[in-house]
Each structure stands twice: as structure tokens, then as C-alpha cells.
Amino acid sequence: MRAETLLHRLKWLALGLALGLSLSARNLERFLDAPRPQGDGVRLVVFNPTVHNIRCLAALREKGLLEVPDLTIVGVFHDRQTENFVAAKTYTTERSYGWLKFHAVTAELSEPVLFKRNACTPEFEAILAKADGVIFFGGSDIPASIFHQKTNLLSEVDDPYRNYLELSAIFHFLGGSQDRSSKALLAARPSFPVLGICLGFQSLNVGTGGTLIQDIRTEIYRKSSFEDMVAQGAEQWHNNPYKRLQPLDKLMSYNFHSLQLKGPSKLTKELGFQATDHPRVLSSHHQALGKLGRGWVTIATSRDGKVAEAIEHQQFPNVLGVQFHPEHYQLFDPELRTRQKPGDTPTSYYEILEGTPPSLAFNKAIWTWFGARLRASHGR
Image (tube, rainbow, N blue to C red):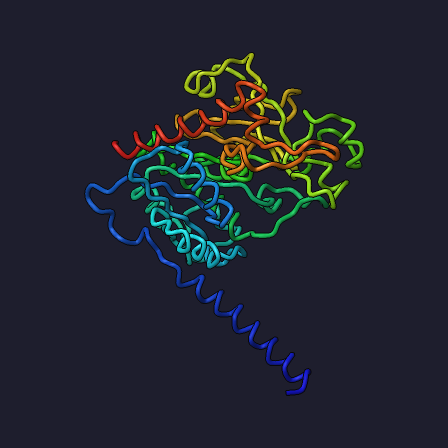
């Protein structure tokens, strides 16, 4: 066979495989369509069930941090997202994670209808009726047009349908300043727990009518180079500038920095920490909250007070957003080692937390709190 003919056939084979994956994604299960059985265990909905997010959830369960008996986790996504959820399904099947199910949303959704009743509204109503809590995970940036800004040259938007689905869900759950006459679905279940992490934290704000600062380095700290950010000091890093300066050194992209807790809040009253505590957290983001959306109050910031790190909802007591990553599977594993800066001795995320009290206890306490709220929501 001529090389040109073979190459031509291989290209068509690759195209067919890609099409097959796309069609397979559309055929993933819709777990929430079935009636919820009487006596069913606790159900947690997580948006964007990627392989990474599933790995984090599995680690939380295996380490006893998300300790919820008979827990079923339902991964919700839009079938027009760019993520490969076939890979996520395969990962789940290969590891016999029977506790993880999938629910693909296929209803049409576009930017002009995000903050009003739309074709996905019945999906959001089903989540509130058939689940006991929700998590929104991290990811890339939100299209700036959604919060009425031009797009910064440093913004990185790569999965708008994910943003559409999650922002519309948040508006439906919590309400927002985009339409003050719209009734929040959580009004019927005010103790329903919702946790937003990193992008999920930013989405909680934008979904309720808030805005974002599109680049911390240039807009807050007025720096124009990664070298300038290094000189600023690690407490002002919200990701690791060395990752860009030394790409061949295999350094972690995350950064550890400490928090300034503001009280009283659920971090102090319910998790049991003090304003004088400065727990270290794992961080990887370049955007920050701007104007707060409807219903939010800031309960933690960076040590210099310039970047919001945690928010809680004033109407719904179990809704929390954190800009950092308490879910990362490496946080609680002392064996996985990495380096932050050139010349560092490899260490684990776990050792960094353990060596800076009360950092380890703080990151664990978020999951103790959330698991308790899930169980209480199930027993409503």
C-alpha cells in the first residue's frame, strides 16, 4: 500500500474514532432521570466530572475525609463541553467506582438565557429534588462578556458550555442581581449544601451577578513580568511563577500561601478556627473576585487583604466558596513529592501543611463540615 494512501486512511480512521467518542459522550447515562428510590443513601452532585476531579473525590473518600456512608456521587456535565467524559467513564469503570454515576445534560443553552428560566431549568430542579448537595470544581476562565467586561489578553477561556451550565445552575439555585424577581430554588431547601472551589468559587460570584478581576498580577499587583512577581514574594503568588520561568524543571504549578480569616464566619464559628490563625492553602489561579454578587460576604482574604479567598452566603447557611484547593489528592498523601522552586528539596504537599499548623487541620475541616452538611441535608 502506498504511504500516501495509508496516511489518508489513517486520517479517516482518526476522524471516525473522534466522531465515535463524540457520539459516545452523548450516550452517557442520565442517572438523575430515574426516580429516587425510597431509602436511598446520600447523593452528591459534582459538576465537570473529569478524571482529575474523580481522582480527587476518590482520595477524599479513601482517606476518610469525605466520610459519608452510602454516598453516591453524580457527575453532571453538558454534552457540548470540550472535556473528554468518555475517558472519565472509562477511568471510573476500570477502578470499579460503583459509587460514581454520570448525568449528561443535552438541553440547549446560550449566554443570553443563562440568568432566566431556560431549557436547562428542569435539570437544575431535578438536582435540588434528587440530590443532597453540590460541588463546583476548578478550571479555566469564564467568558468576560458574561459579567459585562471586555476580555483581558491574559484570560484563558476554553470550555464555554461548562461555564454556561454551571453559571445558570448557580443562578437558579441562589438567585442573583441579574433578575431580582427570580426565586432561588434553595428557598425550598435553605440548608442544601453548596461548595465552590477555585473556578467554582468565581462562578458562585458571577452566577449571582458579581464580577471578576481578570488578572491578579497586572491589575492588583501592577506587575508586568513573572520575574517581578517572584520578587513580590510567595504570599502574593496565587500560582507559581517559577512554573513559567523554569518550564523544564518540572515544578508544581500551584503555590502555598496563608489566609487572613475574617470573623465571625463559618470558618471561625463552625470550623473552629480563630482570626489569629493563618492556615496555608494550595492555590492556582490568576483571576479574583471583583464586585460581589448578590448575597455574599467575604470571610477570608490573602494576608495583604487584596484577594478574596472565601465567601459565604448570607441567606443560605451551607453555601461556601473557596478560592483555594482543599480537594487536591496530593494534599493528603505524604508520599507524593514535588518542588516549588529551583533548588528545592522535593517535599509533599502533606508535609507543607503538617509543618505549618493549623494548615492540615484547616483543609481537613472543610471536608468534615461539608460531609456533616450532606448527611443533614439527606435527613431533612
